[in-house]
Amino acid sequence: MASFEKFLHLNQQLYDYVIAHGHNGDPILQDLAEETRKLGRISGMQIAPEQGTLMGLLAKSIGARSAIEVGVFTGYSSLSVARALPSDGRLLCLDVNEEWTAIARRYWERAGVASKITLKLGPAADTLRSLPASHTFDFAFVDADKSNYRIYYEEILKRLRANGLLLIDNVLWDGHVIDANDKSADTVAIRELNDFVAADSRVDAVMIPVADGITIVRKK
Image 1 (tube, rainbow, N blue to C red):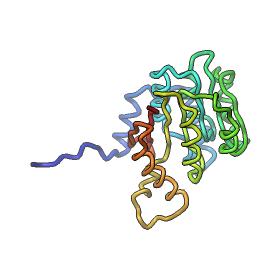
Image 2 (image 1 turned 180 degrees about the horizontal axis):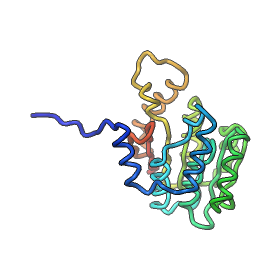
Image 3 (image 1 turned 90 degrees about the horizontal axis):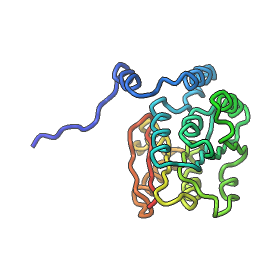
Image 4 (image 1 turned 180 degrees about the vertical axis):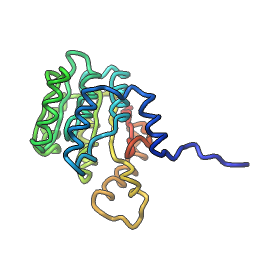
């Protein structure tokens, strides 16, 4: 019996079509993306437009009121999530870079979501460990230093409510996860977390090839 690939290899024209046919045209996010692009090569850390849209849809779909983000950069993902929260919702953002998060702060203010967001600068692992067990989240996003992904996963999962969602970014790592010759610390950390999540009985999980790969985890 013939086999058929159930995936597409996107070229630029097809990707542009994908973007044009989703709700990815917010002017504030477009301005933020443009300002971030001027930072140069580091701008590649910003999430893709369809990823931000997906995150907002997921957060809103589960009625999230309390969220956490590890790795803010210039604020595209946090802005996408904060907008999906109700007026009394709260988003805790963890990062170490004051320069990049200063850009995020400006756009949070411009979008009218700054009152929902608390930014804590410092090592995210320390901040997470210092949170009381009673501090729970409905929605989480991890997009930070890869070597600590497993720590972030465990610290968030223990505080995630049942049926809450945890999204992990860069799980395909530009394809390096399947390169057996790549033994760099970041690649190994992502590869090991991917293997761990795939076997974790505490959750349901799916890896999707959006942007650089996202794993969506639902706590049972």
